[in-house]
Length: 373
Image 1 (cartoon, helix red, strand yellow):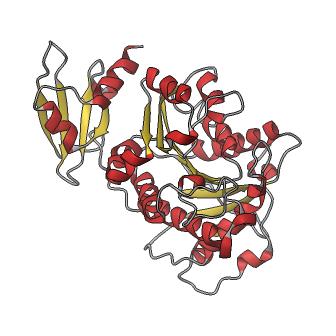
Image 2 (cartoon, rainbow, N blue to C red; image 1 turned 120 degrees about the horizontal axis):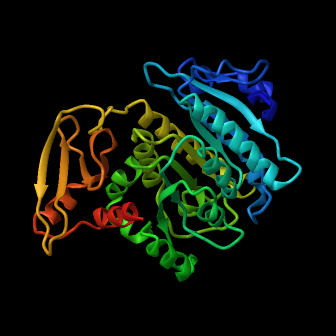
């Protein structure tokens, strides 16, 4: 099957834009003819699927999100973005997830970043399996107030997927009153990285190195408090602010590793004056802006780094840090790799200052444990 076989065109009204500076004018959309997508940087597609969730009206969200995105100003000097239309729901929910997988995989193989407009976040399993023949050690970040590992949850399917190519899961902005202790303890035992909302909100910049090392991001709009995002069945009085959500999206777009981004759980039926769709569009705007402001900044990409070595207590391995002269961002080298296979993970200046006291940073310890498996 070809990519076009999975996708349906948009309504002709999406071809009518008011401003040449808008994304509706810049994006090459599937309205009459299928876009020439092979040379694009980013490809958007919607998934009209509301099964397997109480938040069922998410099926109508993709067109709402793109309509709000299309009117936003595209102030970047040069972009190459296509909108491939929508996946209609399959005969079964698994059929829809298979379509998400196949569309995403075709794009990933051509080094094009898929942006998935959900739909329920349970579709993210298809977003994950698309990487199977492409990446060996995948890092996934889930931004959601509810983290589940039960049989009906997409993380359950990801954790049990064979063959296993998952290296790490970051669960950002989860809220303890919505999450069973078993889920957090399981993630912790696997040396994954759950980060509670209160901790994240104390300094949202702590998410930057996490997202800098992420290959795919699942953004549940329910992570944003109801006052800023009312369009969700699970009305949540606490959560991220709209500004924090956009900041996280910008960090994700800036990441040199980020290759797939999905926004899920927008429910137009509950959306007062399209507030949530507007916020979802702004989140996409910031992700795209971050992408086009990437710095090519990684120890494997250039040599403009200052190298520091910190000695640990109790005969633990030394921690080697790299500080970029371009951006002043930090990385840590993980022992056990060398040459072109050298493994470095993003970190913060705070990790470096901790290591200067002889204490091992938590991210370094978790990476050592996973690397030893």
